[in-house]
Image (cartoon, rainbow, N blue to C red; front, side, top):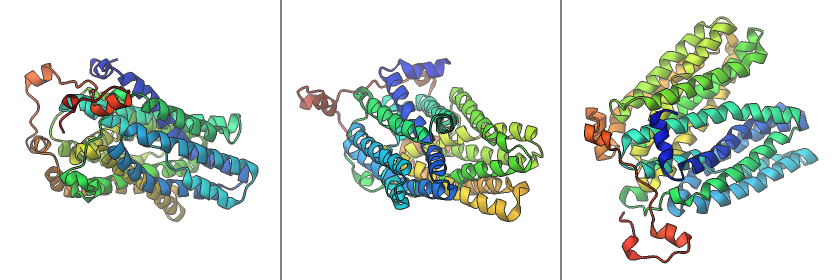
Length: 443
């Protein structure tokens, strides 16, 4: 393991919450595809399967930010575990209704009500932010590592889900996902030593992060970035089928994720250069540039190589984007801010898939990659137009870095700050220890 990444796991408890959180992330990547395959197999209708999965996703766009706000106000364990238990119970009801041939409306009701799985990725990033408070270099590595975990989940999750649904039983993939969601969340929440303390919201923190102009710009950019992902998936399925290699669509898409994961690992090993906003705009620009050659693929071989190349811009864009969001919101609303960004991505994925379906239907598969190329270019234009607002919304120290590009001095780099998990009145109370005003951490 490279030295920069090894440093992350020198912190006590980091390996435990990372491993536990990955189980829940894997479940998230399995849920959508396993729901579609299960309902399509048991009810013989892909249209119904898509509608149920879409209704669940639409509900997630509402519940995820609300859960993020509750996490900020009450703590990770107190919110994540009940949310996961509710999701587990209603997901089980969805599986039972699908298998028992219950009325169609029961699938929609249980599917919608089950959309309360907590955003473990955001909570993991919040833990790193607490551990490496004031150390931008360490947070750069941590955010890179988190993005790599996301990519691994979305590489392995659909493969595992489809294998279980086809080789074991139509319900097997969805059952595995709901179990992993509960187990991963409970184990993650059990790591109390690295859980960030609850901070009272004051001043700007009393309002929703959505009211911040910088956060709204980031959400809009992420909507178009998500639309790139959603349209790219459907465009690849349609284009490979037109080439006579429809069965290779999954491999081609996996290569894009592999390219993203590899670039994430390498990006985390690079030293920070420039400010938060400049790095994010550069990432979006790279995505816009690397999407364009897909229109010249022509055959399955070049397509595989170009998809791998296109994926190389994904992780840097997401890493710099989430880092920027972390600087735009107060610490007391970090989870809500990150879930708003993820909500924008999910909305974009849904809209991008819909738009790509219309494009393929009316313009043909040969032009399928024009849409993700145009969407990436639009995301870049929005990021460029909003750059000044993004810089203005940063915390004072981060804003100075964004405008000057200054880096920490050599002494700070030689002796990085690593904040070990703190003992607060909250954690002492949770462990049954007496509280003391002298141990209260100043906010």
